[in-house]
Image: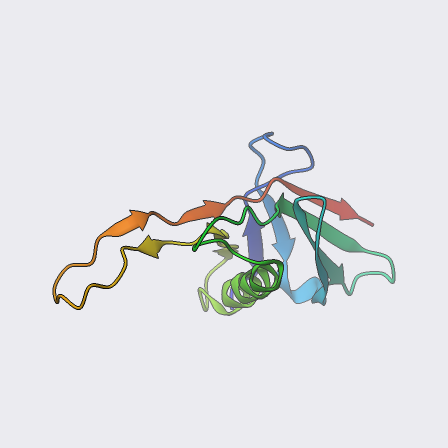
Length: 134
């Protein structure tokens, strides 16, 4: 396990800041909420009773046949978080990966074998803010 979890977001959207969170201070994910087209992740820290990080990313965009749902977004965020915690053993920094915003859609199955055309490529939601509350 790495020493720090890197989130490609800072306190203001688009500020270009990367936030490092000490992994040994993380108590766990308190909640993942989808509301007002924003997905918010609350990461509780074990430093003090009130310390936490609030990480935000665009909400589920949806789309015919290939949209992520609120439930799948919550699962994708927790999976990305847990994967980042377990990644890079012995390393210093592990990066929190992006989550699917719009899922890939293959062409309708015709029964033919071989290459399957993709009619809609996958897109990924990038983290917009990461704010620490002591």
